[in-house]
Image (cartoon, rainbow, N blue to C red; front, top):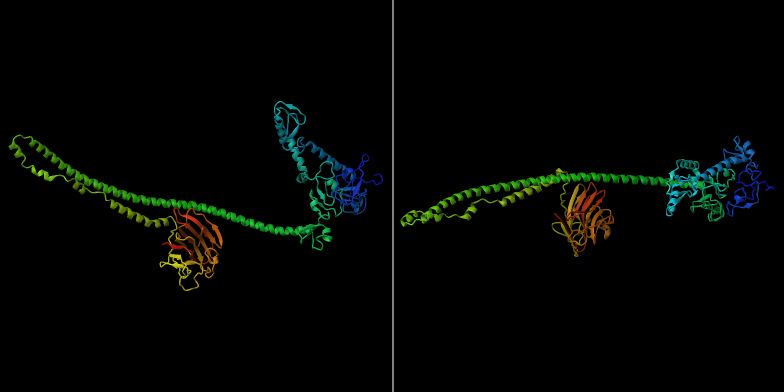
Length: 628
């Protein structure tokens, strides 16, 4: 030490009473170390240690005697007189070092006062006990919980005892001090990386990849200014920034192998002769690519947002439509109830009228029979008086005109037959005619409530398109599969697969038809465009197996099919009759299972660009019938 006069680079400026001699100098770091700081120095093999050597200005080769606070750099006199630091306010190194030392010590002292004695970290939500000691709220609560089993409570610091569990009180002032201390050390709190050569924790502002060490502002000013010493943001992942083979700093990027490499990798390693780029250049290029990707992803995100909004708007529209439809249904059934109630009133009125007529008729007959009954009573009294006469002459004279009474006996059955009866047949006829009139008015009532009138389209089979294994009935509504080939001439419209189309095309409007498939084990029904290929054998021309047709298929399972994409469907019962509804302008083709109640099976949506035909595909042991 006395011979070299070289001190540790990272110790505070030596005082005469306590010099810190350097015991080794690192050629890699271009720094000298005392025993203490040497223990913290990198142990990597590329850090060559030699006997202590002096440190001088790399530009002027003069001893570094001053510190430039403006540039946070140690400089020689020539740097200040005629160099990059000309005219700057500078300080002697020992003065500047003392200032930094005082600042660091003050910070370290304050930090010590802000540590919780339980967790040894900065206070979090500090609270105080009555004895005056402070703790983190969670720490003291945990400590008191642990003491609860013993039934005795005491302060973890001074052991002051409490007869009952103490209630910690929030220490707002201490909390504010901690917050201000943390705000004054944002880098430390953000990275958690400290200076390698400080005795008390001081936040690192830079990390040197060459030295494999981190530096605070003070020690960074003493660090080598050589270009080989690459400074980066504070990091602990130094090994990741060096080549695992050559132990050198990764400075280049090899696009061919998409790898970060060192200079030795390029000169004599696996990447020899490859085109390479500096990391920052390659990084910018990759960032430019990433910008394009980000823009694309943002565009996709915006598109997804528009789709989400469109779906939400669709949901709102359908909810409003549901409300309107519910109101229309309520209005229609109100009309139906009114019509039926009117019919009921007319029939009930007719029954009441006929009942009144029957009652009046029977009442007249009752009066006549009552009069006849009175006359008979008088006769009976008269005859009984004669019967009591003892004188034969008087009896015979009085009984002369009594013989005609027996001929005027009352005919009960005739009386009932003469009375009027309720005309049930008339009531039934009125009911029948009223219901027929009601049925005729259903269409008008649906139109009044703006319900579309779904009338069946007159769909007939086109025999010129039918495969020769399909027999078409005379009514052109029924077809079944046969093993016997039909002798029909070939033509451009005829399928060579077992299919048949309807004879009429649909290029606008709404259309509806029903198909009985109860006698078919396997079948496909649906709609096809006019340009559907007819002369291709196999599945390619089957309904739904291409982009020109849409179908509902039963082949063991129920399936919706279009463009060779299958969607399994579920039905609670076998499908016997299918309703097909086409709304050409809306681009909707729907299938319904006609049972009680009617079930919606599937709806295809598409932008129809050609006329559509009803389409049918039959298999062995199958027949279909278009219902009238």
